[in-house]
Length: 250
Length: 230
Image (cartoon, rainbow over all chains, first blue to last red; front, side, top):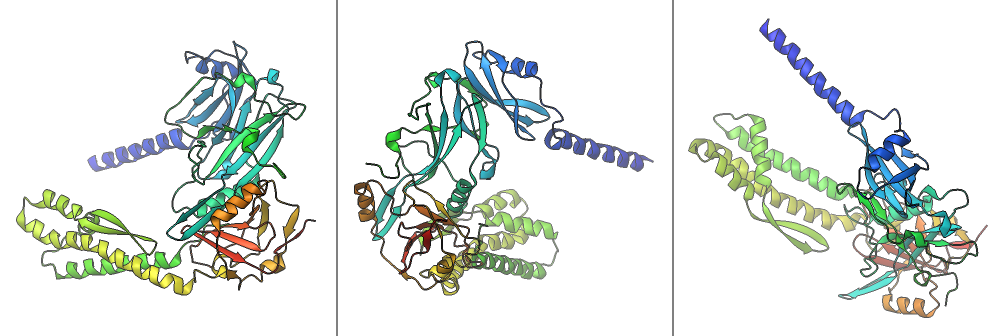
C-alpha cells in the first residue's frame, strides 16, 4: 500500500517537473502582447517614455521587433524575446540605430538587420556592408595576404521609418566559409577599426534623395537600456565613404 | 558547404579511447574484490584531469600533462580508508596515463594525414566542385561567371609564391582594385580531410588563393576559370 502511494507520488512529481519544463522552456507563445502592455513594460525604465507603437514584427516564433515613437519625438526600437513563458524586453534603443539581431549566433541565416530612423533625416537608401580588411603578414618566411572583402546591400526607405532585413544569401555563404576555417571558434565581428583582426564585420551608411552620403542627425545622443545577459544585438559600425572602395576609386 | 570533419583525427581518438577501455578492463579483471563498474569508469575519468602545458609541434597543439590533478583529488577523497585507495589507485593512474595515449594518437594522426591528403595539392582542398558558385566579394569585380569545365581541370595546378607585401602595395597603388575580388563557394575538400577553406579567385581568373585553418596556399593556372558574364 505504502509503496503504491510512493509510486504515485513519484509519478506525480515527475509529471509536474515535465510540465514545468514544457511550460517555461518549450511552450510557444500564442499571442503577442498588446500595444498597451508593451508600452507599460517599456516605460518602467527611467529614461523611456514610449508614446506610440509603430509595428510589431515577429522575426520567428519567439523574437519580436517593436519600433516605437517616444514622447520626445524620437524613433526607437525595442527587442523582445519569449522567455520562461513571458515576453521580455531584452533591449531598448531610444534611437533606432541600425543594428544586427543575431537570433541564433551560430546560424547566420537567423541574423537580421533592424533600424528605425527619424523621417526628418530624409534617408532615401540604407546600405549595409560586409567587410573584411585588406592586410598582409610575413613571419618566419611564411607570407599571407588577406584580400579585402566589401559587399553591400541597399534598402530603399520609402514607406516606413523602420524595417528588418535578413542577410543576403551570398553573405551567409561567405561568412560560413570563413567560420569553417576557424577551429571551434564562432566568428567574431570586430567593430573596432583600430584593431583589424582580419575578421568579417558589418557596417552601414545612408544616402539622401540626391544619392549623397549623409549621416542621420537624429541618431546622435542615443540612449537606451539593455539586459546585460543578452548580447545578441550589436550596433553596426558607421562607414564613412572614405573607408569604402569603389569600382574605380582614386 | 557542409563542414568537413577530419576523419583521421576522429579515428585516432576513438582508437585511443578503445585502448584506454582495454587497459581499464584488464586491471578490472585482476581485482579480487569486485568494484562497481561505473565507479571504476568514474575514477578513471577523474584521473584524466591534469594540469597541462600546450606545446606546438608540426602545427599541432599537444597538451602535455604535467600534474596529475585528478589523481590528487581522488587521493584526497579516498585516503581515509587505505585499502579502498589502493584498489582505486591503479584506475586513477590509468586515467592520468590516458593523457599520453591521446598525445600519441594525435601524433600518429598528424603523421598519417598528409599521406592520405597531400597538403600541396589543390585537389585535396577542392575535390568536388559540382555546386560551386562564384561570389563578387569586392566592388572592383567584373560581371563574370564561373567556367565549371575549367574548374574541373585544376587538379594538377602548380603552387606559386605569395608575394604578400607586393600584392598589398600594388593594390593600394592600383586605385584599390583588389587583386582577389571573387570568392569561390560551394566546393568541398576531399572527404574526411577536415581541410575547410576559403577560396579567393584572382581578378584574371587564373590565380587561386586558399585559406585554411593553418595557413595559405596559392596556385596559378594557365587558363582562366572565369568567363564573360551572361
